[in-house]
Amino acid sequence: MARRITISLEENRARVVYASRRGRGYTVDDILTLDYQELERFLEKEKTKTFYVCASFSDYFQQTLYLPPTGKKKLKRLIELEIARNVNYPEGFVYTYFDLGKVEQEGRTKREIFAVSVPLREVNRYISIFRAHNKRVKCLFPDFLSLLNLIPVTDYPALYIFSKKNERIMFLVQGGRLFFYRSFSSISDSIDDIDLQNINMTINYCRQKFGMETRVALFIGDPSFSDNLTVEPIVPIANLMLPEKIQIKTAPAEIGLSEIILPLSLLYKWKSEDLLPGQYRAEEYLRGYLKVATVAFVLTGLLLMSLTGLKLINIKNELGEIKKTRAGLTELTSLFDELNRVRADYGRYDKAINLLIQHRNSPPPANFLYSLPACLTEGIEITSIRMGTSRQDTEGLSFFIDGRVRTESLTSLQSAVDGFVSKLKAQQGITVDRADYDLRSREFHIKGIYR
Image (cartoon, rainbow, N blue to C red):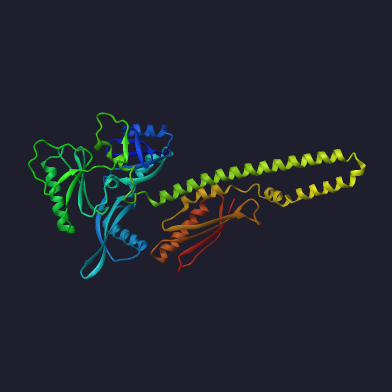
């Protein structure tokens, strides 16, 4: 029975949901509310290694872009450049986007893109909470993108509103695509006239900005409404009915659906890319690979030791038989023939044994692979790594690294490769014999010895 732990990181607390897989849905087994000190203790004791996370970001940027039609790879590069021109995140940013389709603008066909970005510093701050306890973050969504997982795909525009205490989150969705997002503070925990005025203004803005006629406004969760409402909404309003996928066994009486809707939303199918940085994904993949490789190496070693032991036992038994039969002079010739055959079988392993003895002082390749992420510079992308024994250096392993440089200028290409090589040389035991690169293909090749 698969188990999943989802966590919503909010301003001064964390909501934790334990859920178990039941058929095509989930059963919520437990719900916890923790402050951040309690969360640290929880992560220290919890045996589960992987967590699904959404968080509130204090700083974010959203923009509607109109870009020329192009392939997905080039489109992402154009989006990155546009975001970089409009934000001031010195340490970098992480983004996701929604392709809203093609539009005609000034007589030209453009691709309309809604992009959302957050500063890398905030993403790393959340990831560090889990890394400090050797935990892995499977996904990291901003709260409003996590709520998008709850939204059904419709062919008409709908405005969705999520209310938590004195904060309101509103986003416009059509066909599973996000067109607009807005959050604002409210003076009341309940939905009041000011909130309804904000909803009406947002609907009018979306009509003017996108030419979209919002058909309905839907509240997510179980918000409370003020008893003194006088403002009339300009579209019908209702509560969003959640899909019958999740059953809640038990929940504290003081916790309503709105209080746990964020961690619950992580149990549904994701409708956008999360915001985990590419470098974090690569490091986690490498860590997982090294764990598997280490286990495989140990198991292979044990298997070889077992086979060697069996072979030695067989040889010992055969030699014992030879000693017994040597007493019979009539069988002396056949006994010597058998002895010669056993010796010939054992001699097949001489080269392999000598090779193992010759390279017994070679360092483990896992240490070399573990040191690579610290050497990567901006733009460097490794495509292959090969390692083998060195005939010239019996105490070292030869390595070959091939890759590409993702940079715009030739100067940046040379700087990226030189920086990568310099960091490799700075690692203990690594000697770089040759490093070259091709200016046209932007590929590089590095050869060296690891001792």
